[in-house]
Image (cartoon, rainbow, N blue to C red; front, side, top):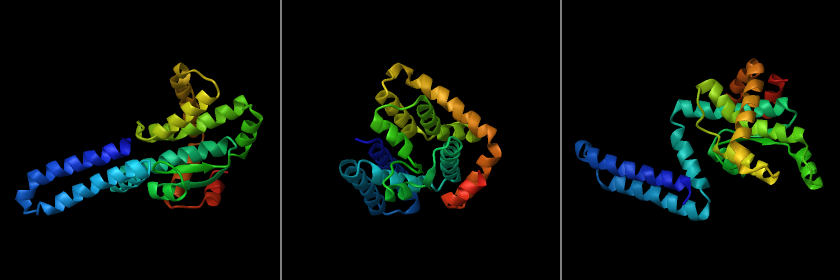
Length: 222
């Protein structure tokens, strides 16, 4: 069972407990929480077997968006990816800031930055990726976590980013025991890049918060 489905079931259990405690006090019909709980459980079941967790991710993302901090974390996280990719010469062609937007573009997670990957694709076809290209992509993957840590002093997102980096390293022949070391190294590199370009980063965050398109975002950090 996916983590998303588990989260939806956990919400259902919480709602069941809450309705049992508060229902008699506010004259809430037991039918309402029962139908709500059945709905969440139904979503969890269908999503787990048919949509690989994407539907549940959209629901959880929608619920989480009632928290202003959650929305700000998404924006700052993706701005970190965007800025570092731009600084390292990997073109950004788009970005999303919600699970729904990501789903429409065929992306996983709560949002993401879309990169122009033709250069690395050419190297993959030749069967040899340069050290420079490896470092650039590893820095980009860790940049979202780096941005969250700089702004919020902790990172809540980035699980998918770490997984991508680890899969990439494994494909290049690195042993699993060095994954955490590489994560820490590239996290530090990404932090340094963001800090050195802090004013550009803040401008980019403001632009992405307003939904400015990629072309205009690039002008602000040129």
